[in-house]
Length: 211
Image 1 (cartoon, rainbow, N blue to C red):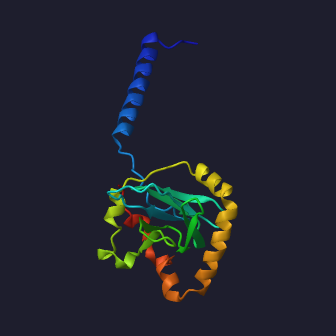
Image 2 (cartoon, rainbow, N blue to C red; image 1 turned 120 degrees about the vertical axis):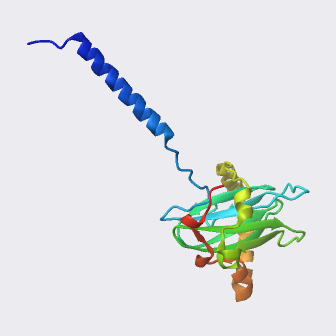
């Protein structure tokens, strides 16, 4: 059996290296798609909880908690956070304060593949210290995704600490939540409607811009 000349082997090796170099260079030239932190997965919904920055920063933390006591979002002054949730109906609590905690309710009716926006602002009101404003798609100029949301950078805090805090305060939170839920059930449609995210209030992934 005749062996290949060393020159041929050397040439073949150089060709492989050249091809690999060309492939790497080509891949490097292809820009990677930037995934928007606001776009919802096709099978889930995404709710962006936004707390605009105030000139006089408040040290009160907003905790968005689901019925199971798990934190969906934590908001300090000027923070914004998105929560990925399953489509359907959800009741969530906005928990503020510590001694005792103040509970406010809101209802989410979500569709898969859509992004919803809820603005939370502080106000001087002992029973309802947070003003909950739902950004409804139909109310936006040309139904465009709110520009103010894109301008505010999202944060990614450790929600485990928040959930542990909720578990520690569980007895006080549950007592308050039961009282607020009774008032919710007794309230009129206008009151509940203002605090309910409707399925058509959201934007599809193609309508949500990258920051």
